[in-house]
Image (cartoon, rainbow, N blue to C red; front, side):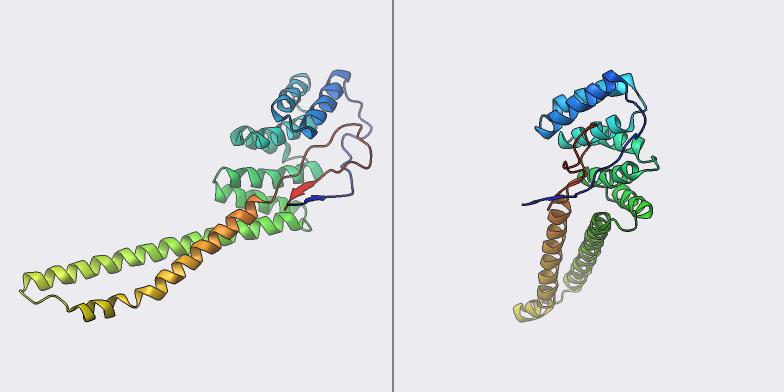
Length: 230
């Protein structure tokens, strides 16, 4: 599984001097995050937020670290707080918010977040890709549920007919007649299995899309801003 990097940097808070303590915490948090020490990174981002509660970089980083720790509710709150930013960071937060909702099993909020991300940046191919995957998965699940309901209705009707025959003293169906009644179900069962396999593939593909990671203040221009795990 390869990592996909983007060769451009987010320019955040240009010309606005960071408080010394906040800048130090953000740089420390960025290094911890890069070293996959997500718990410590989250603590550093939270310390930065204590000093500057409105710092969008710190909130975004806290959301990314919480996401890695599978603390999805905390990640959602962090990304939502940044999603209103009128910048690339706000659009990235919406993308990440969609992934966070998806990982938490919340399809509808994930769809809404992806759509908002696309509205902010119609060229975001990853957001479009993820939205299509979740919509397809949802459609497959709806089709599966409808088919299950149809099968239950058919079984219920067959049981009612059998009970009526038993009450009227009629002989039960011969084995060949039962086989004929059951044969049409076989292609449908095969289709159900195909639908389930397709839904599983969609789930795995969507899971493989990773989020956009935080940037480090003062980082060099060679450092990537967006990270995708395909």
